[in-house]
Amino acid sequence: MTRILTTVLEKTEAMKKGTDSYLDDILIDDTAVPASDVVEHLARFGLVSKEPEPMEGGTMLGLRLERDGSGNLLFKRGNEIPNVTDEMSRREIFSLCGKLVGHYPIAGWLRVACSYIKRRSGSKDCGDKIDEGTLTMIHDVVRRVRHNDPVRGLWSAPQQGIGVIWCYASSIAISVVLEIGAVVEGGTWQRKKDDYHHINVSELNAVVKGVNLALKWGLHEIEIRTDSATVAEWMNSMLTAERRIRMVGAAEVIVKRRLGILGELIDEFSVKVIVTQVPSGVNKADALTRVKKSWLRVPEEQDEEKVEVCTAGSLCAKELHGTYHLGVDRLLFLARKVYPNITREEVLRAVRACVRCQSIDPAPRPHTTR
Image (cartoon, rainbow, N blue to C red; front, side, top):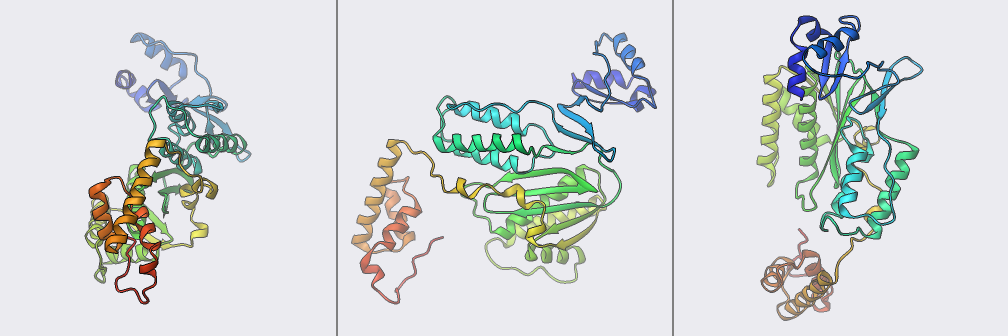
């Protein structure tokens, strides 16, 4: 449908310059072509359209458009906020989160909240009911959205000027906010549970995503704002080439690869980049990576089979450690020969609970917690 509509609107030069379309929505510039001419043009090719409506007070791409006191055209959520029932399945939770976040360019804290909720219910089947903790979270999210919906922003963003990219990373997610005079787009990507990347590497990943976002907007002059002093130093060293990028550790190759990609993008698209270090308190991308502290303290629901396996694994770790008194790494290797699903936390608790090992001061071998 998109291809058909685009082809029809490009039949004449006036229609091509005065209209823009996405799926079945058509944006018309009245100064270039009247709306009645567009309707007649579509009818000649067998396309039926509804009556044109003004942008102000109407809807476009599922967004409702209104003007503020300064005359700026703003968008907000176009659909109704769905209701939450007392019993919901995993399928219903995913559907509700999709309706809340949708295709909106700006969703603020809502995007990471929905991702966190979906992750909690991800181990269940589609038809299974969610636990009480997850249900309380989704009730809280819908209540906050009704009170203060973060889905809103400027409809017509300026195409000139410097684009400001706010980058941030936490243990939960990485986020990017693009600002061109005003915030025009924000993105959040939740980190995996077993994400082993150092926080500086995650901050650098946020910078890569931010530069890609700015290039999609056609910006050639951007300012990167990050609260990581290390990432700011890496970026400035890469841009100026005044000194070598010095770092050691397992992530050395990963960091240099990311910086190489950024350097190629900047050179290929002739982008002028400025890097600024800002405090975390003023970083606009910070709020996009946070969930409530009370959510983090809510344990995930476990079925009886998993609880039995967990208990058996803990007993196995305690028995093996009492026999050999090994460290965490070696004990974990042996325990997984018997119980493949045993976790490092269970082995660590067994080692720390050993009176004999704790009585040695200093310990002959450190018990690593990597």
